[in-house]
Length: 220
Length: 220
DNA sequence: CGCTTTATTGAGGGCGGTCAAAGAGCGTGG
DNA sequence: CCACGCTCTTTGACCGCCCTCAATAAAGCG
Image: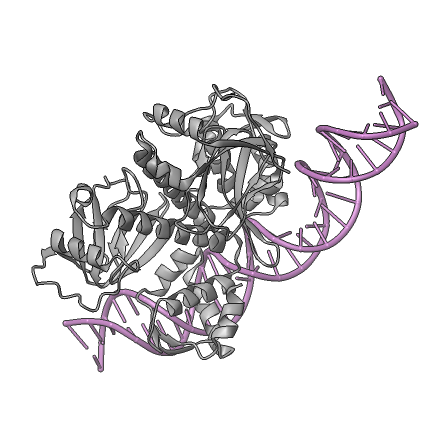
């Protein structure tokens, strides 16, 4: 169930998606509607029309695609401040779901065009970033080994975080479906990284990286 | 070596990239410079600045990315009429190389903005298509089996062709690097598809599909 | 034709998947 | 606060798909 969330912008801590367009993002924040989604709730569906765009205010989101027999591929993860739902011209190829309880800013795509500010540049920058990440993801899925995949994944999280301890907003299954592996393999690779002192898990979903150089080397 | 190619538009047979914008493409054709590239010649390099965009007039192109140890992932293939080089805001993540001897129309990205016509829409449509294909590719690489990968690949070629006999513009190595497999596995899967009468190779790079339904089923 | 490159086929091995069970985390209720 | 039950994660044993290595065959090209 979705519930309207009518606080004023409670997201002062939200990081900017693209540098130099903060004021433009402020315009967005005043335009859209905030909606709360529960963990695992669908934000939009596979093959649904793509006439809306979204921004994560609080929580985290995954995009995913299911095959008829249940195999799943995760496209990407989005965290507070990230824009998503830009990925296509007409219909979504991937569904979007709440990774945790979260609050999402929802806007009409058409509103983007009529609004002032640097929205065109923002749209372009967001889509470019999306393509960049997709291409990096292609290399990871097509040519990296299991240990390289997991190392790359952790490294990506470390880079996107400023804190000493990084926390995983997703479970092992989501990691596996992002990396094209099984949960067992992900778990084994994590244990291995921990055994070699390259990462150190303080909880199931929190880790530190005492040896970033080694992690980077493993990511290839 | 690149050689300037100064014929008048010799590409009357070139198919439109996006429907409804043919007249816009005509504008492009009058704006750019035609350059001939030899087989395997680099059109742009990995990490090179992305200030140009390209259109295949004749021949075919691949985008690819190399890991330091030689592993390679192919991003996509482009054929006569296709636009490419749109995939990023500033730097290319993948290199582009001529799959065969080919003629490429090259334009300044900045020229796109100043020109008339529906160029903005064309750019958007092209980028969207790029993202769509990348996302389909993610699913293929992450979650499909070798036989499903090969079947999907052939099916994609069949759909992009109107002729009865489809020809592969690339060799087995390029197919393998697109699919995240080895040439041996690709070859085995092709032999298997042929043994089960789902495809029929008339030459190493030409095939027919007497049983499209079965091929579609195999692609999952 | 002969040479080089590319594709096919076979035999064997290893990485990651499958199946199964034990362990850890966590919310609920006694 | 602890007991209980559920879900998620870890670990182990084994298997199979795809990779590796090697040899042969075919195709391209002078």
